[in-house]
Structures are given as C-alpha cells and as structure tokens.
Image (cartoon, rainbow, N blue to C red):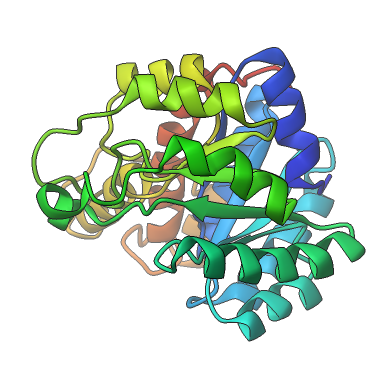
Length: 293
C-alpha cells in the first residue's frame, strides 16, 4: 500500500520510533525494499533522486506495491532540485517530495518551499524540506560546522512554509565520512522541542548504530540511507561474478534458464538484492519500526 510521508511519520512521531528511508534505483533494490518491509511488517520510505531514473523507479515501486499489498510504503523524491523536476515527480505518482533549497538564504528557501507545499498539498502529497545544509562526507571537516541548523530559525521555517517534515543538519554527512562523525544531540533535542513536524536525518550511512539510536531518542523520525546498503551489495555482486562469494540466492529458476551457468547477468543483481535487503532489515530493527506497519 502506498501512502504519504505524513501518515508514516506522524505515527512514528507519536509512538517514538524511526523509519528507514533507503534510496533505490533499480528493480532489484526496490524489490529488496518491499521484501524487507513485508518480512518485518515495517513502514518504509522508498526514495529516489530526480537526477536518476525517477519515473522508472516510480513505476517499479507501484508494481511492487501491487505485488506486496500489505507493505506500507511511501514513494519519495529525495533532494528535489529544479521546480520542473518536482512537478515530474508529482505527475509520476510520488506520494512525497523533498524540495531541497538548503543552500539558499533563509527567506529564499522559505519562499520556494512554500510554493511547492501549496501545489503538493493540493494533490494530497507530503513535502519535506531542509534547513541548514548536510554536506558530503569527503568534505566533512570543511562543511560540518558551517551547515548546522540554527534552532531559532526552525520553528519559523515550519510555520511559514507549512512543510510536513523538516530535514535538519546536526553533524551528519552524505556518503562515506572523512573522519569520525560528531553529532550535536543537544541541538537536535532543542529543535525537536520547538517544532511540531517530524524531523529527518540525512546521511545515516556510516554514522554508527548507537548514534542513530540516540538521534531517534532525541527526536528524529526519518533516517536516510544508501551507502551502507549499496556498497556491500555491489561488493557482493563483484565477488559473485568472480566466483569468490559464498552468497547463494534461490536461483533454481535461473539455473534452468541458463543451463546451470551460475555466473551471469541475471543472477548477479539477485545476489546484490539479498545483501541490500539484509542490511536494510538491520536498520529497520535498529530504528524500532519492525511490527509498526
């Protein structure tokens, strides 16, 4: 079942748990998301960047939503860029969009987010925006402090935009960290006490299990993930193709199709998807969302 970000995160905020938001860019990774959601009876936010195959991923999500009708999933545009890109997501059936104007001055950020909120809400779609700026892990030492969210702006931003979820910068970073993550838990607590909407943590990968659990305790409801699933999945596929992996998915149908030849293009994504799914299920359990769908 596809639903909005409001529905999933509203319940998470009331009941005090986190929801995983994995980026998925292929049919096999989307399938892994739905299998994880169904296996653990957990809500899930399947995300995709507009700069990748956004329409194709949307269709994959809608296909697996029909195949796994008990899975409770939001189809979410991650880091929505140009206005036209966000409109494409709305036309493609996304049930949630992020408009990322975090590099703009406060007033410009408010103005552009408010316009997208007006349009999306008219279509029954939830909106996430970012205040402060979460940079990339390779520049962590340069961007961590300068991008932190100002708590005094958070409540005003939410009130003036009408946004449904707020992504905050509290010391995390996208991708692989250069250095050790240092999170501002007190800042996060203060922001959570000032705003009424669910809070989002970008850059969950590499942040560490204990840090992520503490973020949820301090007020985070949505945690974005990609690197911690995609990298091990890719490595497993490479090992499998070289014949160096112990990963053996259920490939009986594939073996019949390919006359017993295991190392082929059809099987490799299945290997990656199983690793992706296992990593995702770890985070679902860690965040306390298993059994919450």
